[in-house]
Image (cartoon, rainbow, N blue to C red; front, side, top):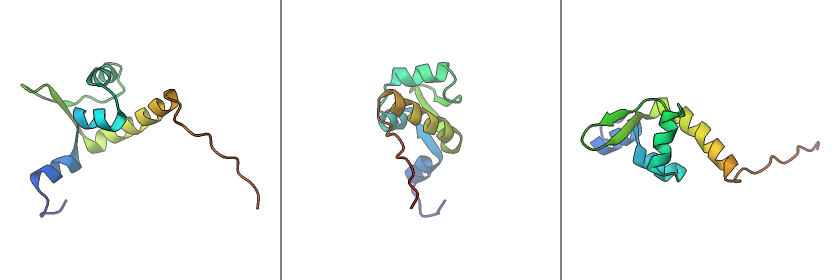
Length: 87
């Protein structure tokens, strides 16, 4: 982290919000809540009074990466790997 970062930049570097997950994965808040209940995401920090969920980016990134692959597969977005050729 650089001292020249704004508080918002530091927050964005360290944390992921449920809103960011919604946008990144193109899923609804309901889907995120369901994923939490099924253990597809670690427990978040709940911002009381706002109903917002926040995760530490370092902790949640592997979960999000796996979820991206799962969603892409179900949405038919995965491209088959091209066969390797000997040259």
